Image (cartoon, rainbow, N blue to C red; front, side):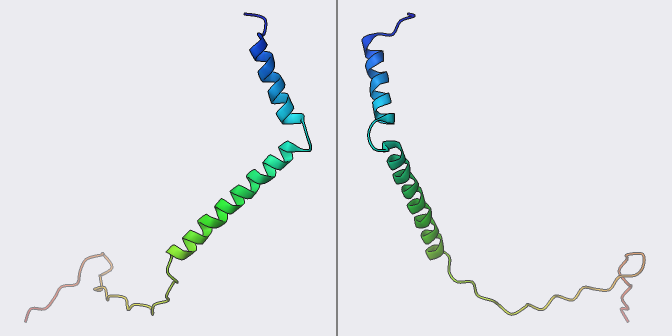
Length: 81
């Protein structure tokens, strides 16, 4: 179990070749990945903008009148005459 088999070495060599071989393959892959993320974000923003209707400003609504209370917080007595 302590040693690596031929398959392990082949996988390690393949990974090293992909990561470090050639003319900046990693930077190219990461650049493409970043472009994909930016395109996704701009697409999501465009969908949100299209889904929201433009905001309309409505005039202020009148506030309902509240019955006056006494100092003790009780309702004033009504005259039923």
